[in-house]
Image 1 (cartoon, rainbow, N blue to C red):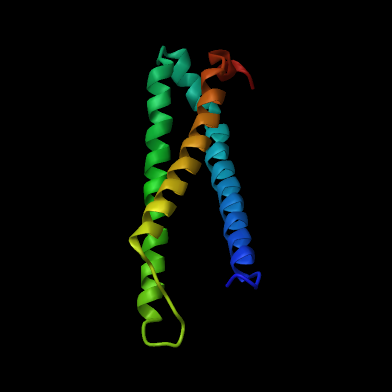
Image 2: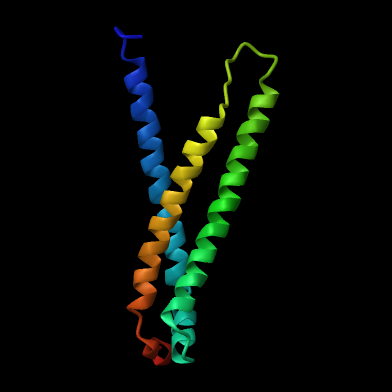
Length: 130
């Protein structure tokens, strides 16, 4: 293992996958905010506080992250179960669950933070623009 580049290549692949996944997840969550920016403007025009809007966005981030994490872990476990009698090696330790859960949480919170900044800076008058 010390004289070959497989661990380094595997680590780079995992890092690249994490970065691409973070970018896609963040962009998807942020696009949800942009698509519904007029509704957030309506809430602000009706007097909803920034704190309430912040909690709405954080709740959405937690729900999306939890559903995505659950589906990912479930499909991974199903794949591992399906491959149990093959020559493929499959190991799914609890540390991997914690690491991936922390990664998903970080991605969701960063995407939520960017969305929160957009909504807090939003002018309620956007509702009246065509």
